[in-house]
Length: 122
Image (cartoon, rainbow, N blue to C red; front, side, top):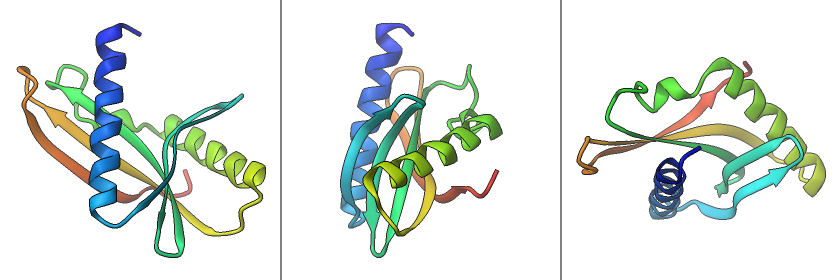
């Protein structure tokens, strides 16, 4: 992955974290890693744990941010969430959300959309 894409992804994750905090979410972890992969953001929303995937797109050459959350990626996120819960010994209701961030070609923020329950048992 190029440095530009890495920087864009990190920027998008920061925007997503600020967006979630403004909605009252409590960020528990960012870029949580295990041997199987990474979860962008882990946050508490009331009595529920939200595992948040952040997709940031500049232009639409790769499609919309939502199109980046494939069935394969959704299944991987479920596996990672279950690993997190097991490793942290957490027994809580949980879900997987998506924060879709879209910029125009010049880098101007067009939208930051939070989709709760974006992955439902894929």
